[in-house]
Image (tube, rainbow, N blue to C red; front, side, top):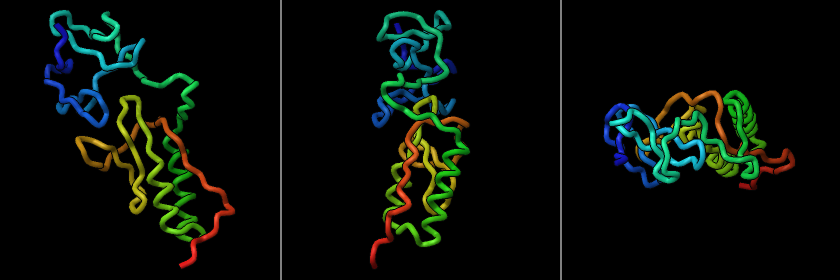
Length: 160
């Protein structure tokens, strides 16, 4: 029977927010099925992963990218940082008000291949990963999925 354990033999914890299991020892989510993209279960006796949804053994996938019709954008970390820095510079120069700046940065959340959420801190300019119910400063992978929010240059500063 499929147990909720990691390949490291640690019991997985259910994370309601992401609707997934998580291994605290490995600090990662289990791999996903190549067909349905759901978490795979580790079968200790066979030393293999099993998909309880598809009812078959499977090799884990490296990526959980959604089909193109979902219009998920994949970005290089450097491109995200470049766009963030442009936004931050506009805010610092006064051509973008604080509320708009913070609102746009708040919307710039990205997912990695293990469905972890990442964002850049509006005040710090540092990367943070959402882990175990809180944002932890960390270094993201090179490629992330999500939307880079851009605002037009014509937007005027709010009156004080």
